[in-house]
Image (cartoon, rainbow, N blue to C red; front, side, top):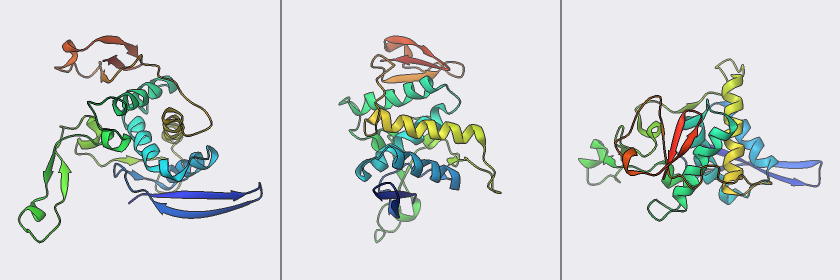
Length: 211
């Protein structure tokens, strides 16, 4: 389970660092620098610990869906996620929206009634494709030798910052730059079956936004 660093400071000179489990995350793996970036932003923005898991879920969704996009492009993906949270057609938390999709029970627990059921997302059936594409989800902010992967580290920091601002639990707020979009797709890769039934809003970067 991912760990989040809780930072408590008295005045400007004394800080105490403790660890607390993130109770609800996507299960993605963060390299050491990715973890430190997460902790740094949460501390800098003085995010209340009750929002940490939600920030992490949204940040991971922004990163995996839009890490190569501009700051505005990342914000747009984050805002679509938020718009779903605010819409009764979707779950009411960021973690549940990000991980939404049909599941299957593990064959191990299915054949043994004495075991607590364990469920896995069905491959390629999730609302956000990265979550169940069959690939291991790792935020590589550094190589194994500790060397920073500059592009990934920068994208991850932007993703965490935007998650804080979009949720509205930091020192700034990022407004919706999608005009209420609840859907988007990567137009250079796919044309989804549902696109013809949605209202076109516009294009930002590599994504087309709709509602």
